[in-house]
Length: 307
Image (cartoon, rainbow, N blue to C red; front, side, top):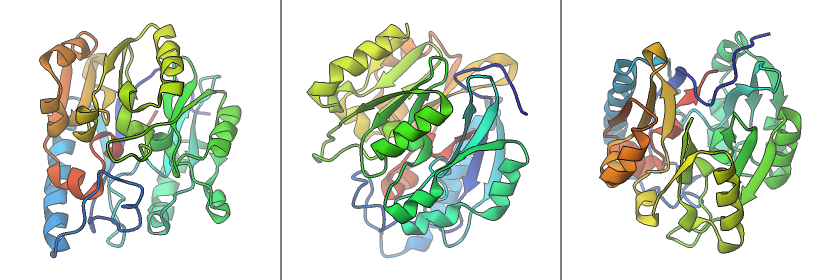
């Protein structure tokens, strides 16, 4: 049994280098941040590969351990490797593995046997929900559930990729409290993944409260305030620049880092950055515009936490 002290963040991640990146037509209906493909998808694959390496190298330079896996040539979205699997703590401190059901059929290829074997060599499988795809139910891992690992609360923006029944089952099995809420983005649709509009660090939270519907907004704010974390509010305009798609990680010597894209970094105000820098030693960022434009996801989506 792999047991470690329970922490909000980790110093080890997995990243998936793309081999066939393009705008996935099977996800664009629910992902309003995703653009249509250009005539030449080979060009965006090449650009995405370079952007991936740029972000990965910045993370490594920040003292964070990165396990890099080569993607599959027929898998347009496997660069976003945090949607089909997660590792997390049980309340007894055991670090475990969970597999999840994915909405898009062409994303299910991401559950490759060799990658699963790699993970299963380190972790016990606590739960496998992937068969729920046959029942038309989806819960896309840490995209669907933002986990407060210190207080054992799972926040979830309800959408077609975050089934409430499966989320309740996950929470019951993993010992978490379920905190669902409804959202509406700039296009009038639910925010497809929770990790696009919020993130939780050790002493702070970044969240777009503005996109949470009024009937749920106060309750979510109150729950976050009760944890003692400082709340940094993200505007709807900042949401579109992927400011919510950020992740705290731990570098050499226990120094906390906050990882985000270059677009997100520039969209944050100096005052907001100053709050983050009260809790982290560095904001780590790199420009990934092709990945954001055609994938509809950003830095956090590319990082699978390994606890």
